[in-house]
Every structure is written in structure tokens, then in C-alpha cells.
Length: 309
Image (cartoon, rainbow, N blue to C red):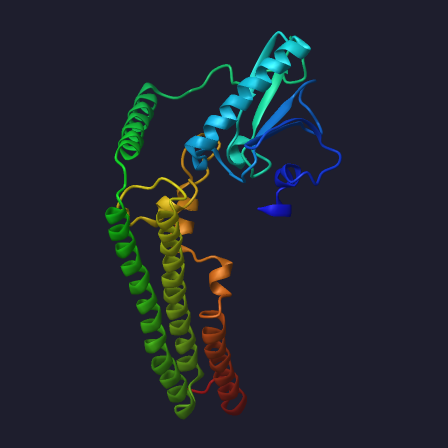
């Protein structure tokens, strides 16, 4: 991630003020600028990994060994009465730097950390049982996927399926443009001949609908392309033959009560981002047609009045 990540700067040894205590070919450990307690150490992988579920087994092994080494060192050097190992993922879990890190925090009675767990919660037995079953099923799925090696032939077939979806989305985008151009321009032309600006306004509304459809196709295409790259390069474990682009995304952040934020999930799926709207295939094409429509409306009203049509 380079200079955008402060921890990557430390890994690259470009932070002269860092209090580094350990480094090897896989991990780096250092004191944070504002330690929670004296001896508080951060242990990070040298590779930029944002969250724990993106960690490879090999990197996880090296990170775990380093955490154990640092825990023993802190215990021997400072003789705390206790020690916390804290690893946070996502803003809702108080992760402030998007580079995976483990806090090794020596603890003593009355230190500044205080309690880190609630004294009690109000989850019902039914909710806890459902969560238990969901986690068990997820573990079974992960274990099965880990135990079944993906053959080159399976990967090739998976990539073929994904490429077919990408091609279909691209074709749908082209079809949307193929339909909108004659429909909207004909509506604008009819509005001029009939001297009816509301017809041009209807054309603008139709244009917005086609623009959203096209942006949705492009957004879906990019999400499947991302999944294609992940499968092709084995960047992350995903279900074999999955055609769900959600598998290529980071898990949706949870609400404060631990429930999945459904709005964020729907937004990711159905609301194209700014980069989609500003892309060369959306903004110039639909922007030009929108300006043309506004021009037709202004021209009709200017020449024939607001009551025209």
C-alpha cells in the first residue's frame, strides 16, 4: 500500500521516530506513539494485510510466533501481573490503521486500560444458539474448502464461468447504450416538433433510468472482474465455482449491536459508487445526452413559453 499506510512506512524503515523492538523477514514489532500501558507493543506482518480474514496461513504462522516471542519478552522485561493480546478488525472494532496488527499489552492492577469487556449482555438464548449454529456451519464450510485442493482444471472452469458473466454484463451495458440513444434523441426531437418541453423532461427521466442500469451493469462487471482476479491469483479463499461477487469483498461492517448492516450490503450491491458514475463509459455519454435534454427544454420554454405543449 506504500506511503498511504503508516505501518508500511515503518516496515520500509522510513519512520526515523519509531521505537522498533523486533524485526525479521516476516514481521515487525514496535512501540506505538501513545502506548496504553508501559511496554505496549504492536506486532505487524511486513506484507500489507488489512484484516485477519485476509491473512494467509503462512503469514499467520509467522505472526503468531512473533506475538508469542514478544509476549514472553515483555513478561520477562517488565514483569506485569497480566497481559492482553488484542487484534481488531474494522472501524466498529476500533481498528484505526488498515494494516493488521496485534497489540501486546502488559497489564497491572489500576492501570489506564481499565475493563475491556462489558459486565453483562442481553442476548437471548435463541439468538446465542442461532449464532452458535451459524458459526459451526461456517467452520465446516471453511474446513471443507481447505481440505479439498482446487485443481488447475477446476480453476480454469471457474474462471471461464466468471468470464462469461463479465462478458454478459459488458454486453448488457452496450445494449443499454444502444437503446437509450435512439429512444432519448427521438423523444427530444418530438418535444421540439410538438413544442412540448414536458416530453423532453420525460426523455431526461428515461435517460436517468438507462444511466442507472448501465452503471449497475458496470458495477457488477467490475465486482466480477475482482472475483476473477482473486480466483486466478489465489489471493483469497473463496468457494469453488462461486458466482457471488460478495465473496470477493471484505465482509460488511457490523452495527454496534453485532448485527450485519444490511443497508451497507444492499448499497454495495445496488448503488454504484462515485468511480462508476465518473467512469469514461458513463459520465461522458449520459452527461452529453443530459445536457442536450436540458438544452431542448430551455429552448422550447425560451421560444414558446412555459405553457408550451
